[in-house]
Length: 376
Image 1: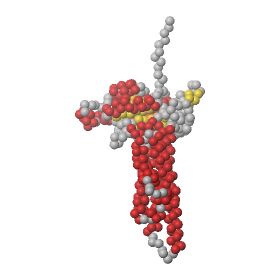
Image 2: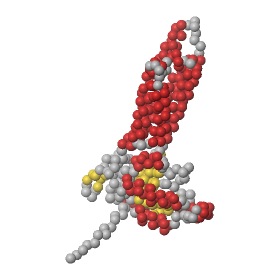
Image 3: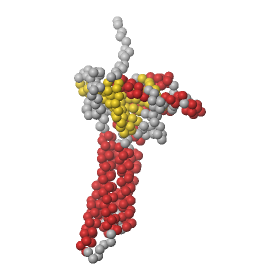
Image 4: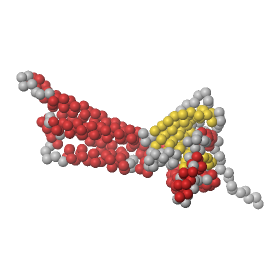
Protein backbone atom coordinates (compact mmCIF):
# COMPACT_ATOMS: atom_id res chain seq x y z
CA UNK A 1 0.00 0.00 0.00
CA UNK A 2 1.10 3.54 -0.55
CA UNK A 3 0.68 6.62 1.59
CA UNK A 4 -0.29 9.61 -0.51
CA UNK A 5 0.12 13.12 0.89
CA UNK A 6 -0.87 16.43 -0.66
CA UNK A 7 2.06 18.33 0.89
CA UNK A 8 4.99 18.98 -1.42
CA UNK A 9 7.38 19.03 1.54
CA UNK A 10 6.26 15.69 2.96
CA UNK A 11 7.69 12.33 1.99
CA UNK A 12 5.45 10.74 -0.62
CA UNK A 13 5.10 7.39 -2.26
CA UNK A 14 3.42 7.05 -5.59
CA UNK A 15 2.41 4.27 -7.93
CA UNK A 16 2.22 4.62 -11.68
CA UNK A 17 0.91 2.16 -14.26
CA UNK A 18 2.14 2.45 -17.83
CA UNK A 19 -0.20 0.88 -20.38
CA UNK A 20 1.71 0.23 -23.58
CA UNK A 21 -0.52 -1.46 -26.16
CA UNK A 22 1.78 -0.47 -29.01
CA UNK A 23 5.02 0.66 -27.37
CA UNK A 24 6.84 -2.42 -28.53
CA UNK A 25 5.41 -4.73 -31.17
CA UNK A 26 6.68 -8.18 -30.31
CA UNK A 27 4.88 -10.88 -32.25
CA UNK A 28 1.60 -9.05 -31.83
CA UNK A 29 1.89 -9.04 -28.03
CA UNK A 30 0.86 -5.83 -26.31
CA UNK A 31 3.11 -5.39 -23.28
CA UNK A 32 1.91 -3.66 -20.15
CA UNK A 33 4.33 -1.98 -17.80
CA UNK A 34 3.95 -0.72 -14.31
CA UNK A 35 6.04 1.97 -12.75
CA UNK A 36 6.11 2.60 -9.06
CA UNK A 37 8.16 5.52 -7.91
CA UNK A 38 9.02 7.18 -4.64
CA UNK A 39 9.85 10.87 -4.70
CA UNK A 40 12.10 11.66 -1.73
CA UNK A 41 14.55 14.32 -0.73
CA UNK A 42 17.54 14.33 -3.02
CA UNK A 43 19.92 13.20 -0.32
CA UNK A 44 17.84 10.20 0.72
CA UNK A 45 16.00 8.46 -2.14
CA UNK A 46 14.16 5.35 -0.97
CA UNK A 47 12.74 2.76 -3.39
CA UNK A 48 9.02 2.10 -3.33
CA UNK A 49 7.84 -0.57 -0.92
CA UNK A 50 4.18 -1.66 -0.80
CA UNK A 51 3.87 -2.22 2.92
CA UNK A 52 1.22 0.19 4.17
CA UNK A 53 -2.37 -0.85 4.89
CA UNK A 54 -4.26 2.33 4.17
CA UNK A 55 -4.18 5.75 2.52
CA UNK A 56 -3.83 8.74 4.81
CA UNK A 57 -5.82 11.87 4.10
CA UNK A 58 -3.93 14.75 5.73
CA UNK A 59 -6.86 17.09 5.41
CA UNK A 60 -9.07 14.98 7.65
CA UNK A 61 -6.37 13.11 9.55
CA UNK A 62 -8.12 9.83 8.92
CA UNK A 63 -6.93 6.65 7.29
CA UNK A 64 -9.40 5.46 4.73
CA UNK A 65 -9.26 2.00 3.34
CA UNK A 66 -8.65 1.47 -0.34
CA UNK A 67 -11.52 0.75 -2.67
CA UNK A 68 -9.78 -2.39 -3.88
CA UNK A 69 -7.40 -4.74 -2.12
CA UNK A 70 -3.97 -5.23 -3.65
CA UNK A 71 -3.72 -8.66 -2.05
CA UNK A 72 -6.74 -10.13 -3.81
CA UNK A 73 -7.79 -13.75 -3.90
CA UNK A 74 -6.54 -14.05 -7.48
CA UNK A 75 -3.15 -12.74 -6.39
CA UNK A 76 -3.07 -15.24 -3.52
CA UNK A 77 -3.85 -18.09 -5.92
CA UNK A 78 -1.15 -16.88 -8.31
CA UNK A 79 1.56 -16.71 -5.62
CA UNK A 80 0.57 -20.04 -4.06
CA UNK A 81 0.72 -21.63 -7.52
CA UNK A 82 4.33 -20.52 -7.87
CA UNK A 83 5.18 -22.20 -4.55
CA UNK A 84 3.41 -25.38 -5.65
CA UNK A 85 5.27 -25.28 -8.96
CA UNK A 86 8.57 -25.24 -7.06
CA UNK A 87 7.42 -28.32 -5.14
CA UNK A 88 6.63 -30.11 -8.39
CA UNK A 89 10.10 -29.23 -9.69
CA UNK A 90 11.58 -30.81 -6.54
CA UNK A 91 9.57 -34.01 -7.10
CA UNK A 92 10.72 -34.20 -10.74
CA UNK A 93 14.38 -33.75 -9.76
CA UNK A 94 14.07 -36.45 -7.09
CA UNK A 95 12.55 -38.84 -9.62
CA UNK A 96 15.38 -38.21 -12.07
CA UNK A 97 17.99 -38.82 -9.37
CA UNK A 98 16.29 -42.03 -8.24
CA UNK A 99 15.99 -43.45 -11.75
CA UNK A 100 19.58 -42.51 -12.56
CA UNK A 101 20.67 -44.51 -9.53
CA UNK A 102 18.50 -47.46 -10.53
CA UNK A 103 19.83 -47.26 -14.09
CA UNK A 104 23.42 -47.33 -12.83
CA UNK A 105 22.59 -50.30 -10.61
CA UNK A 106 20.87 -52.08 -13.50
CA UNK A 107 23.97 -51.84 -15.71
CA UNK A 108 26.17 -53.57 -13.13
CA UNK A 109 25.75 -57.39 -13.23
CA UNK A 110 24.95 -59.17 -9.98
CA UNK A 111 27.89 -60.96 -8.40
CA UNK A 112 26.55 -64.46 -7.75
CA UNK A 113 29.59 -65.31 -5.67
CA UNK A 114 28.85 -62.55 -3.14
CA UNK A 115 25.31 -63.04 -1.77
CA UNK A 116 25.74 -60.28 0.85
CA UNK A 117 26.45 -57.74 -1.86
CA UNK A 118 23.47 -59.00 -3.90
CA UNK A 119 21.12 -58.64 -0.90
CA UNK A 120 22.46 -55.14 -0.23
CA UNK A 121 21.73 -54.12 -3.81
CA UNK A 122 18.23 -55.58 -3.57
CA UNK A 123 17.55 -53.69 -0.34
CA UNK A 124 18.75 -50.46 -1.96
CA UNK A 125 16.42 -51.02 -4.93
CA UNK A 126 13.48 -51.71 -2.61
CA UNK A 127 14.31 -48.59 -0.58
CA UNK A 128 14.26 -46.38 -3.68
CA UNK A 129 11.02 -47.91 -4.95
CA UNK A 130 9.37 -47.46 -1.54
CA UNK A 131 10.35 -43.78 -1.51
CA UNK A 132 9.01 -43.35 -5.03
CA UNK A 133 5.68 -44.87 -3.99
CA UNK A 134 5.48 -42.57 -0.95
CA UNK A 135 5.94 -39.52 -3.17
CA UNK A 136 3.19 -40.48 -5.62
CA UNK A 137 0.21 -39.21 -3.60
CA UNK A 138 1.86 -35.92 -2.45
CA UNK A 139 2.99 -35.16 -6.01
CA UNK A 140 -0.40 -35.78 -7.57
CA UNK A 141 -2.18 -33.89 -4.77
CA UNK A 142 0.08 -30.86 -5.16
CA UNK A 143 -0.38 -30.92 -8.93
CA UNK A 144 -4.14 -31.05 -8.43
CA UNK A 145 -4.02 -28.10 -6.01
CA UNK A 146 -1.79 -26.28 -8.50
CA UNK A 147 -4.50 -26.61 -11.15
CA UNK A 148 -7.22 -25.58 -8.70
CA UNK A 149 -5.35 -22.39 -7.77
CA UNK A 150 -5.04 -21.30 -11.40
CA UNK A 151 -8.66 -22.33 -11.94
CA UNK A 152 -9.68 -19.97 -9.13
CA UNK A 153 -7.57 -17.25 -10.77
CA UNK A 154 -9.42 -18.03 -14.05
CA UNK A 155 -6.20 -18.71 -15.95
CA UNK A 156 -7.77 -21.04 -18.48
CA UNK A 157 -4.67 -21.46 -20.65
CA UNK A 158 -2.62 -22.69 -17.69
CA UNK A 159 -5.37 -25.05 -16.57
CA UNK A 160 -5.71 -26.41 -20.11
CA UNK A 161 -1.98 -27.19 -20.27
CA UNK A 162 -1.83 -28.90 -16.87
CA UNK A 163 -5.05 -30.92 -16.81
CA UNK A 164 -3.88 -33.49 -19.44
CA UNK A 165 -0.72 -34.18 -17.42
CA UNK A 166 -2.73 -34.42 -14.20
CA UNK A 167 -5.19 -36.79 -15.89
CA UNK A 168 -2.33 -38.96 -17.14
CA UNK A 169 -0.82 -39.19 -13.66
CA UNK A 170 -3.96 -39.78 -11.63
CA UNK A 171 -6.08 -41.86 -13.98
CA UNK A 172 -3.85 -43.70 -16.44
CA UNK A 173 -1.19 -44.64 -13.90
CA UNK A 174 -2.73 -44.44 -10.44
CA UNK A 175 -6.41 -45.38 -10.60
CA UNK A 176 -6.81 -47.19 -13.91
CA UNK A 177 -5.08 -50.39 -12.80
CA UNK A 178 -6.41 -53.97 -12.58
CA UNK A 179 -4.65 -54.58 -9.24
CA UNK A 180 -3.72 -52.65 -6.15
CA UNK A 181 -2.02 -49.48 -7.39
CA UNK A 182 0.30 -49.20 -4.42
CA UNK A 183 1.78 -52.60 -5.25
CA UNK A 184 2.14 -52.14 -8.99
CA UNK A 185 3.55 -48.61 -9.09
CA UNK A 186 7.34 -48.68 -8.92
CA UNK A 187 7.46 -52.38 -8.06
CA UNK A 188 11.14 -53.51 -7.99
CA UNK A 189 10.43 -56.45 -10.30
CA UNK A 190 8.84 -54.22 -12.96
CA UNK A 191 11.04 -51.15 -12.52
CA UNK A 192 14.34 -53.04 -12.90
CA UNK A 193 13.74 -53.47 -16.60
CA UNK A 194 15.77 -51.67 -19.24
CA UNK A 195 12.80 -50.35 -21.22
CA UNK A 196 10.87 -49.37 -18.09
CA UNK A 197 13.81 -47.46 -16.63
CA UNK A 198 14.37 -45.56 -19.88
CA UNK A 199 10.68 -44.67 -20.09
CA UNK A 200 10.58 -43.49 -16.46
CA UNK A 201 13.70 -41.39 -16.99
CA UNK A 202 12.28 -39.71 -20.08
CA UNK A 203 9.00 -39.12 -18.27
CA UNK A 204 10.77 -37.48 -15.32
CA UNK A 205 12.83 -35.24 -17.60
CA UNK A 206 9.70 -34.17 -19.49
CA UNK A 207 7.99 -33.29 -16.22
CA UNK A 208 10.99 -31.32 -15.03
CA UNK A 209 11.19 -29.36 -18.28
CA UNK A 210 7.47 -28.61 -18.20
CA UNK A 211 7.44 -27.39 -14.60
CA UNK A 212 10.65 -25.34 -14.92
CA UNK A 213 9.36 -23.59 -18.04
CA UNK A 214 6.01 -23.04 -16.33
CA UNK A 215 7.65 -21.53 -13.23
CA UNK A 216 9.78 -19.01 -15.11
CA UNK A 217 6.94 -18.20 -17.48
CA UNK A 218 4.59 -17.33 -14.63
CA UNK A 219 7.37 -15.67 -12.63
CA UNK A 220 8.31 -13.29 -15.43
CA UNK A 221 4.76 -12.27 -16.21
CA UNK A 222 5.70 -9.40 -13.91
CA UNK A 223 9.22 -8.33 -14.84
CA UNK A 224 10.68 -5.37 -13.01
CA UNK A 225 13.30 -2.73 -13.62
CA UNK A 226 14.51 0.01 -11.27
CA UNK A 227 15.85 3.46 -12.09
CA UNK A 228 16.12 6.92 -10.56
CA UNK A 229 15.30 10.34 -11.96
CA UNK A 230 15.01 13.89 -10.65
CA UNK A 231 11.86 15.93 -11.16
CA UNK A 232 11.69 19.55 -10.01
CA UNK A 233 14.57 18.99 -7.61
CA UNK A 234 13.10 15.85 -6.08
CA UNK A 235 14.63 12.41 -6.50
CA UNK A 236 12.30 9.72 -7.76
CA UNK A 237 12.99 5.99 -7.59
CA UNK A 238 11.09 4.10 -10.30
CA UNK A 239 10.31 0.41 -10.44
CA UNK A 240 9.11 -0.97 -13.77
CA UNK A 241 6.79 -3.97 -13.68
CA UNK A 242 6.36 -5.52 -17.10
CA UNK A 243 3.43 -7.90 -17.56
CA UNK A 244 1.84 -9.73 -20.46
CA UNK A 245 -0.90 -7.94 -22.36
CA UNK A 246 -2.78 -10.85 -23.93
CA UNK A 247 -6.46 -11.27 -23.17
CA UNK A 248 -5.86 -14.45 -21.17
CA UNK A 249 -3.87 -12.37 -18.67
CA UNK A 250 -6.48 -9.66 -18.15
CA UNK A 251 -7.09 -10.72 -14.55
CA UNK A 252 -3.39 -10.86 -13.70
CA UNK A 253 -2.73 -7.49 -15.30
CA UNK A 254 -5.31 -5.78 -13.14
CA UNK A 255 -3.51 -6.98 -10.01
CA UNK A 256 -1.10 -4.08 -10.54
CA UNK A 257 -3.84 -1.44 -10.57
CA UNK A 258 -4.82 -0.94 -6.88
CA UNK A 259 -3.24 2.04 -5.13
CA UNK A 260 -1.89 3.44 -8.39
CA UNK A 261 -1.69 7.23 -8.39
CA UNK A 262 -1.39 7.92 -12.11
CA UNK A 263 -1.90 5.96 -15.31
CA UNK A 264 -0.09 6.48 -18.59
CA UNK A 265 -2.14 5.09 -21.46
CA UNK A 266 -0.12 4.86 -24.67
CA UNK A 267 -0.99 4.26 -28.29
CA UNK A 268 1.09 4.16 -31.45
CA UNK A 269 0.82 7.21 -33.67
CA UNK A 270 1.38 4.95 -36.67
CA UNK A 271 -1.43 2.57 -35.71
CA UNK A 272 -4.98 3.97 -35.87
CA UNK A 273 -6.30 0.71 -34.38
CA UNK A 274 -4.31 1.26 -31.19
CA UNK A 275 -5.71 4.80 -31.06
CA UNK A 276 -9.20 3.30 -31.11
CA UNK A 277 -8.27 0.72 -28.46
CA UNK A 278 -7.57 3.51 -25.99
CA UNK A 279 -11.21 4.55 -26.09
CA UNK A 280 -12.76 1.10 -26.41
CA UNK A 281 -10.55 -1.07 -24.15
CA UNK A 282 -7.76 0.50 -22.13
CA UNK A 283 -9.55 3.56 -20.75
CA UNK A 284 -12.70 1.62 -19.75
CA UNK A 285 -10.53 -0.98 -18.01
CA UNK A 286 -8.49 1.61 -16.12
CA UNK A 287 -11.48 3.75 -15.16
CA UNK A 288 -13.37 0.67 -13.98
CA UNK A 289 -10.66 -0.50 -11.57
CA UNK A 290 -9.29 2.90 -10.54
CA UNK A 291 -11.81 5.71 -11.02
CA UNK A 292 -10.76 9.26 -10.17
CA UNK A 293 -7.08 8.45 -10.80
CA UNK A 294 -5.33 10.91 -13.17
CA UNK A 295 -4.53 9.62 -16.65
CA UNK A 296 -1.78 10.80 -18.97
CA UNK A 297 -2.33 10.00 -22.64
CA UNK A 298 0.83 9.43 -24.69
CA UNK A 299 1.26 8.92 -28.42
CA UNK A 300 4.33 6.75 -29.02
CA UNK A 301 6.44 6.23 -32.16
CA UNK A 302 6.21 9.90 -33.05
CA UNK A 303 8.84 9.35 -35.74
CA UNK A 304 6.39 7.24 -37.80
CA UNK A 305 4.39 10.35 -38.64
CA UNK A 306 7.15 11.39 -41.03
CA UNK A 307 8.09 7.88 -42.16
CA UNK A 308 7.29 7.56 -45.86
CA UNK A 309 6.82 3.78 -45.78
CA UNK A 310 4.39 3.91 -42.86
CA UNK A 311 2.41 6.75 -44.42
CA UNK A 312 2.21 4.83 -47.70
CA UNK A 313 0.94 1.63 -46.06
CA UNK A 314 -1.70 3.53 -44.13
CA UNK A 315 -2.75 5.46 -47.22
CA UNK A 316 -3.34 2.20 -49.09
CA UNK A 317 -5.83 1.28 -46.35
CA UNK A 318 -7.45 4.69 -46.43
CA UNK A 319 -5.86 5.66 -43.11
CA UNK A 320 -3.30 8.15 -41.85
CA UNK A 321 -1.09 8.56 -38.76
CA UNK A 322 -2.76 10.09 -35.74
CA UNK A 323 -2.41 13.86 -35.67
CA UNK A 324 -1.66 16.00 -32.64
CA UNK A 325 -5.18 17.43 -32.80
CA UNK A 326 -6.70 13.93 -32.74
CA UNK A 327 -4.55 13.04 -29.73
CA UNK A 328 -5.66 16.13 -27.84
CA UNK A 329 -9.28 15.42 -28.71
CA UNK A 330 -8.97 11.85 -27.40
CA UNK A 331 -7.31 13.09 -24.21
CA UNK A 332 -10.20 15.48 -23.65
CA UNK A 333 -12.71 12.73 -24.35
CA UNK A 334 -11.27 10.30 -21.77
CA UNK A 335 -10.54 13.05 -19.25
CA UNK A 336 -6.74 12.77 -19.37
CA UNK A 337 -4.72 15.45 -17.60
CA UNK A 338 -2.55 15.97 -20.68
CA UNK A 339 -1.64 14.57 -24.08
CA UNK A 340 2.04 14.06 -24.96
CA UNK A 341 4.02 12.49 -27.77
CA UNK A 342 7.38 10.75 -27.74
CA UNK A 343 9.73 8.63 -29.85
CA UNK A 344 11.85 5.97 -28.19
CA UNK A 345 13.78 5.50 -31.44
CA UNK A 346 14.87 9.13 -31.52
CA UNK A 347 14.85 9.50 -27.72
CA UNK A 348 12.48 12.43 -28.13
CA UNK A 349 10.19 13.28 -25.22
CA UNK A 350 10.52 9.95 -23.38
CA UNK A 351 11.88 11.49 -20.20
CA UNK A 352 9.30 14.27 -20.36
CA UNK A 353 6.53 11.67 -20.23
CA UNK A 354 7.68 10.29 -16.89
CA UNK A 355 8.42 13.75 -15.54
CA UNK A 356 4.90 14.86 -16.42
CA UNK A 357 3.47 11.74 -14.79
CA UNK A 358 5.33 12.60 -11.58
CA UNK A 359 4.00 16.16 -11.69
CA UNK A 360 0.47 14.85 -12.18
CA UNK A 361 0.81 13.29 -8.73
CA UNK A 362 2.87 15.99 -7.03
CA UNK A 363 0.64 18.79 -8.26
CA UNK A 364 -2.81 17.28 -8.84
CA UNK A 365 -5.25 19.39 -10.83
CA UNK A 366 -8.45 19.85 -8.88
CA UNK A 367 -11.62 19.99 -10.89
CA UNK A 368 -13.34 23.33 -10.83
CA UNK A 369 -16.76 23.58 -9.32
CA UNK A 370 -19.06 24.77 -12.09
CA UNK A 371 -22.08 25.18 -9.83
CA UNK A 372 -23.56 28.66 -10.00
CA UNK A 373 -24.46 30.72 -7.00
CA UNK A 374 -27.92 32.24 -7.25
CA UNK A 375 -28.61 35.34 -5.13
CA UNK A 376 -32.18 36.36 -4.45
